[in-house]
Image 1 (cartoon, rainbow, N blue to C red):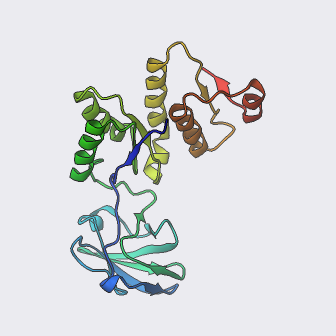
Image 2 (image 1 turned 90 degrees about the horizontal axis):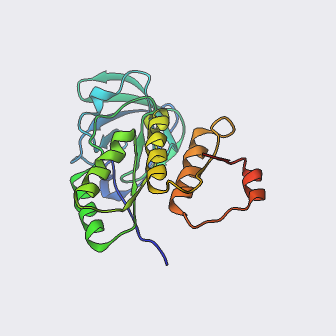
Image 3 (image 1 turned 60 degrees about the horizontal axis):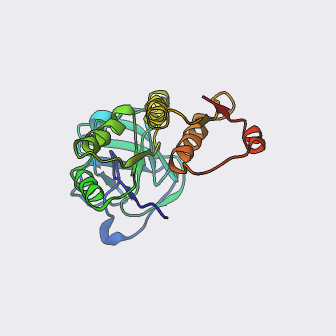
Length: 231
């Protein structure tokens, strides 16, 4: 039996489409203007972002990582809605690429209207899993859980940790999952990786792997090799 999973958009920030969907070549040291303009087209001189209030969220010195970090810009100055940033490396920018700003909390709702609509479809058609993108804290997970509980749905939620805020709040996110697993499986042993031996990202991946692949049986030798412990 194969489970079905849907992916949410979540509270993401992206560049807009480039003019003609052409690639833009960036050179280290070049200055570029960023603007929060979801309806604008991105050019070499002005990169438009999907989040209108971006200039209110960043500060001088903020790193703006584009396309999963392949392009790095540092904010030099902010003038109203215009952000002047300097490219830290050479690269190529295409349409609708991801934007991450480590250390910056973006004031976006955890679910877009389209996400809420798709969750409704997931409930209707009996989807097994929802992978929630850009989870920043426990509340982002609870936002989906609240919708599912209103419909009596037991769809499982996978929290995708994709930004610095999610990493910073990993303990409260894990606390939620630990509580849920214990509630759902009170008589089963639950295996987790001790955070002292692996990075927090590894802790999350191991935990979600245990939740999603519930029928996986690990031998005591395997558990010993992985340095897993039981709670």
